Structures are given as structure tokens and as C-alpha cells.
Image 1 (cartoon, rainbow, N blue to C red):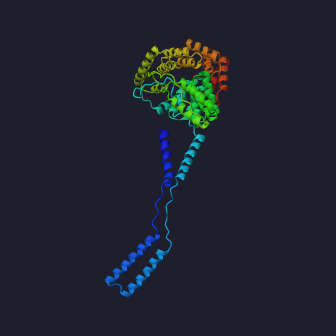
Image 2: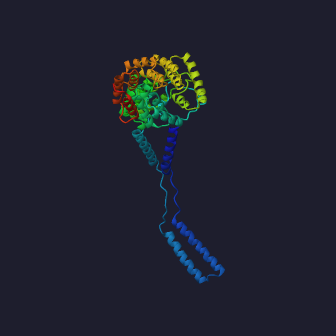
Image 3: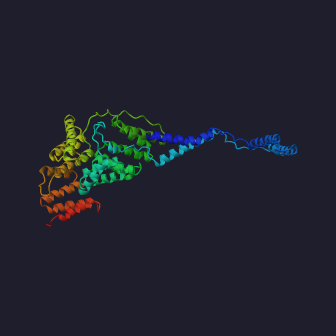
Amino acid sequence: MLFALAAALLLLVLAGISLPLLFSAKSLPERAQYDRAVYRDQLREVERDVARGVLNPAEAAAARLEIQRRLLAVTTDKDWSIRGSGRSPIMAAAAAIFVIASAGGLYWRLGAPGLPDAPFANRPPSQAAASDAEAPHVDMRAAAESLEKKLAADPSSAERWVLYARTVSMMNDWDKARNAYKHAIDLGDTSADVFAGFGEMLVMASQGIVDPEARKAFTSALKSDSANDVARYYLGLADAQAGDVRKAIAAWLALAADVPEDSPMREAIARGIADAARSGGIEAPPLPKGQPPQPKTTNGPSPDQIDAAADLPPAERDKMIGGMIEKLATRLQSEPGDIDGWLRLGRAYAVQGQSEKAVDAYDRAARLRPEDPTIKLQAVGALLSQLQASDPLPARAVAMLRDVAAVAPGAPEVLWYLGIVAARDGKTEEARQNWTRLLGSLTEGGEDYKMVKAALAELKSP
């Protein structure tokens, strides 16, 4: 649609420049023609005056003589006229080529021809394929405002920061989305999707340029998941922008073979390859055949729908979430390998306050991706979210936390929860060590920094 609009505007500009050069303008009438017509009319007027008796023959003869003298002077003088410019097809073609080359050169220099129409981070691989009519309507602005209030009250939830990042990115607020993803990473969510989302928001905020910080984020995403298609796409774009078009094309061809045939990413890949090949003066290779299209199934509620539903009246919320959860849980029984489905089910149960069911769902996801410690951290968060200050920590949460600490002992969220465990067990010094270490990794003056500092101040002296 955007390309069609741009092409139409370009044609209008070219028409305005070229058409006057392709057709000769008609010459304007000569000045002498007007003068001769006036003098002839004056001669006829003299004859009418004679007939009416206004002029006598002597006066009429003198008048005729003067008018004839003027008519003769006009006839013998060199005529002049304003003539239109002649046809010049060569000039028209030259003007058209100049306009197209200038516009294309500026766009190639300042634009981002390989940038997708919408962020890929908003299109997870197993995104629900249900029609819009089947999906519940969610007001993105209202959902964002709700999440902002919750994050202001409790900024320690990495999962909620990710939800907020995805919500505001749908509203094209790249800066807020970028900052939200950064919060989630600082809190220990180092999953591939979060790093890829963070990198993509950096690219969007910088008008399509893959800067060093964005490249670093995409590289981190591939360390967690070497098949992450968002990171692979943008690293290819980074190579193209750096002038290494052959490397970019090779990366995109490999990616095209790994994504489903019906993936919207294939269109962006084809565009990127064509642009890179054109800039490198080589022929664009055809896209390889992709993977079979994913089945059109309804994967249940999205994270944004779940969080937005939390603010509905209890009856409406339970009805909305309950129906979607039931469909999702039923489908997962026949498709137990859908890790994203289990994660969504865990989030849905967590919103409903069914922490044990949420942990069971997260546990199924963790078994499918054992190298990702953030899944168990989400399970820990679900177990602790319903606790009061005086409640003992569930043994299941402590056990999972110890498992995560063995893999990622320095993760901010691990340090935070380990501090909570130590403080509740009366191990004040251990809690202080964990939280002090956490404080050193946070930005001074930020909300997270203030929260950890307040927790340290509340610890009793040994």
C-alpha cells in the first residue's frame, strides 16, 4: 500500500515536470493582428459617420488618410509574438531520470529499505491465527495505562515489563518499549525474545539503523536461541547496511528456508535481498522454499489480553479468561510440545490467582527449554505474587530458585528473590549481601534502585 502511494506521488511529480517538455505550447496571437483589426474597424466607423451626416467629405477624407497611414505603419513594421517552447523529449527524459535518481539515492542513503512494515516482535512464531472476530477487543491505550499503574506500584516484575513493552510497541511508542525491555533485562529476563524485542525497538527508534547496541542485543538473543528469526533478520540487515551485501543475502536466504511459507517475514526478506542485490550490482537470487505453514489453531489469550482482562469486573474477567484458558488447556493436551502455549497458560493462571496451576504450566514449558532459567523465575514469581509479608515461602518456590541460582547466580531477579528467602529465614547478612550485589548492577536513582535500597534499610542489624 505504501509503495503504491509513493509510486503515485512520483508519477504526479514526473508528469508536472515532463509534460510541458513533451508538448509544444501554442503561440500567442501577433500584436499587429490586434492593431490592424482596430484600424479597419475605425475605417468602417468613418463611413458610418459620413452616412449619418456627422462628418463632411473633407473631414472624412482627412480621417481616412490618418487611419490608413497608421494601418500601413503597422503592416510594414516587424511583427512580434510570444511563442511557446518547443517539444524536448530529451529534456523530459533527463528531468525524469534526475528526479528518480535523486529520490532513490536519498532514500537509500537516509532511509531503511529493509525495515519491516511492523515490528516482528509483535508477531511471535506461534501467534494465534484466529480471526479478528473471534479475538476479544482490547484497548491498547487502556491496557498500557493499567500496566503503567501496576509497574509504578511494583516495578520488580520482569514479566510485566515485557507485557508493557509489547503493548506500547503496538502503539508505535518505540522509546517506551525500548526502556521497558531494558527494565525486563535488568531484572533478569535474558530470554531470546526479550533481547530480540529490545534490539528491534532500538532499530525502530533510530529510524531503521541497526546500531552497535542493537547488534549486541540481537547477538545476545542468538546466544539464548540460535534459531531466533527476529535476531537473524536484523543481523542480516546490519550486514547490508555495513555494505557486506553477500553476507546479508546469504543470512536471509538461510532464514527464508527456516521460516514457514506463510510467514510475513518472507516478504520482508525478499525485499531486503532485492535491495541488497541492487546496491551490490548483483542478481537477486530467488527465495528458497520455506517450512510448511503452521496449523491455523487458536493458541489462547495473548499476554496483553490477559493483563487487560485483569481490570475488568470480576464476572466479565472470569468469563473472558476462563473460556480462553479452557480452549488453550484443551489444545495443549494434544500439542504438548508448544512451549509458547504453556507459557501463555501459566500467565493466564497467574492472573486468575491459581498459582499452583500456573507453576505446573511453567514447569511443562521449562522441561521443553531447560536452558532458559527465566521460565522457572516466572514460576517463582507466580508462587510469590499471592503471599503476604508474614507468609512462609513455599518449599517449591525455594527449590526452583535454587535451581535457577545454580545456572545464573548473578541474575538480578535471582539476587532479589534469594535476598527475600534469606531475610525470611532470618539470615540478615546473606540477604544484605545479595541485595547489595543487586544494587550495584542497577541504575542509581531508578525505581528498582530505590526499591532495593529501601529493602536494605529495613533489614535488622545483626
